[in-house]
Image (cartoon, rainbow, N blue to C red; front, side, top):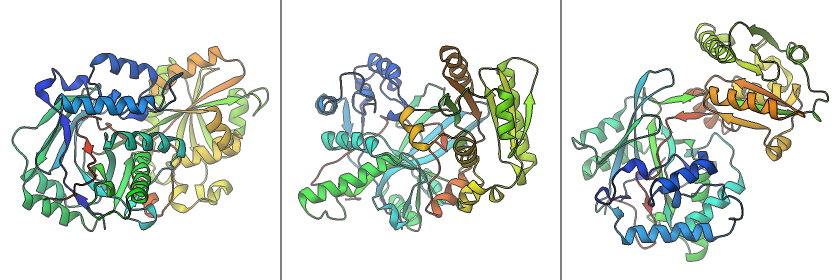
Amino acid sequence: MAVIAPFRALRFNLLKLDRLEDVVTPPYDIIDEKNQAAFQARNPYNMINLDISKSPGKGDNSEERYNSARDYFNKWQEEEVLIRDDEPAFYLYLIDYKLPSGRRFVRKGFIGLVKLSDFSEGIVKPHEQTFDTVTADRLRLLDTCQAQFSQIFSLYDDPEMQIMAALESGSSEEPLYEVRDADGGIHSIWPVTDKDILARVQELFRDNAVYIADGHHRYKTSLQYSKIVSERQGELPDESPYNYTMMYLCPMEDPGLKVLPTHRLVTLPDDVLPGLPTMDELGAMLSDYFHLEEIIGGSREIFLGEVLARMEEKVLVDRQNSTMFGLYHAEEDRCFLLTLKKKAAEIGVLAEKPSALQDLDVVVLSELVVGKILGLEYERIENDNLIRYFADPDEALDVAVKECVDRDNSLELLFLMNNTKVSQVKRVADANLIMPHKATYFYPKILTGLLMNKLVSDEKVGLE
C-alpha cells in the first residue's frame, strides 16, 4: 500500500548557529501574530521567515510575503546556514516530554518521504476536514520556495514495532540534533543511512496505510501541487520529488503517543437565543439529554480541576457511558459535569450519524449541544469565529472570564473535553469519515525547522 522513501534532508548548519532553539518553531498554524513577532526577534534565521504563518497581518496580503520567504531560503543556502545531507536517510525523531499531569514519556517516530495518493485510494487516510483558503496559502508558499518546510504528522500500524526496531539498530550513539521546546520537551534527530536497513524499513512498511494525525492541509497542498506540476511539465515519473511529501511517521502502538483534549469556548450571540439564558435556564434546556451535576466550593480554578478529574475518573470506571464533558458558565461563575443520559444511537440527531462517529464526545457536543440545543449553525460558527479551541484549560478559563466582562451581547460557555482516542481516529478514518474540527490534539507538536525537503525537479526519489 504506502510507499515510503529516504531523502537528503536540508537542515541547519550547527557551525553557523549558537542555539538551534532560536531558529525552530511550532507548526505554522498555531502561531499567532504576537508569537510571530517574538520568533522574528529571536534570531534572523528563525523558521518563521520561511514557513510563514497563515495570518499575514494587516496590509500584507500580497505575494511579497511569499517572495520574501523564497529570498531568505536562497540566501541561507548560499551562506551555508542551511546545508543538505549527502546521503538519503530515514531520520529517527524522538521526543522526551512531560504531560501536563507531570508524567514523562518518550515518543518514537521517524521522518521520511511518502508517495502521494488521493484519499479515495485508501492509502493515506484523513480524519479532519480541510479548507480551501488554508491550502491556497500553503500552495503559494510551496510553489514559490520549492521546498517542504514542515512535516505532516502521520500514524501507521506496527503491533510488533518492527520498523522502529530496525531503525534504532542503525542509529548512531549520539543524535545529530538535540533541541528543547518551550514546554521543556527534548527533541532529537538520528539519521539512518545503512542501505540494507532502509530497504528493510521500506519493505516492512509496504502493507501499511498512513493515517494523518496533524497536517491535513499540508497533505492536500502537496496533492494539488503534484497535479499542477504535471500539468506544466507533462506526466511525472514515479520517482519525481513532486510525487512525494515529507512526513513524521509514528506507530499507533508507541506508548509515548498521546492525544490531549481540545477544549471549546463557545460564544453565544444574543440574536441566537434572545435574552441569553441563565445557567438555570440553560440547565433546563440540557436536562432532556444530560444529567447535570454542579461542582461547588472553591475558586473557578478548583472547579475546573475537579471537573476534569471527575471526567477522567468516570471514563476509567464507567466505559459503557463515558460520553461526558464539563461546562463552565463564565457570567455566573458556575461549573457542571454533563453526562449523556442515553446511548448516542438512541438520540435522533446522533442516530443519524454513522456508528463510528456516534460515541465521540466532540460529535455529541457539536451536533447535539451546539447545533440542536444552542441553535448555532456551522456557517455562522465559521464566519463569526464563535468557537475557539484550547489545549490548555487554564488559558481557556482566562479568556472566558475576560470576555464575559468585555461583552454584553453574548454569553461565553466553556466546554471541557475528554481526549479522543487513537483507536477512534483509526476507526473513523477506516470508515472514510471525518471528525469535527479540532477533534484531536496530538502532543507534543513536532518542531518546524529540524529537517526540510528541497524539491529539485531533475532528481529522483530513492536510494540512488
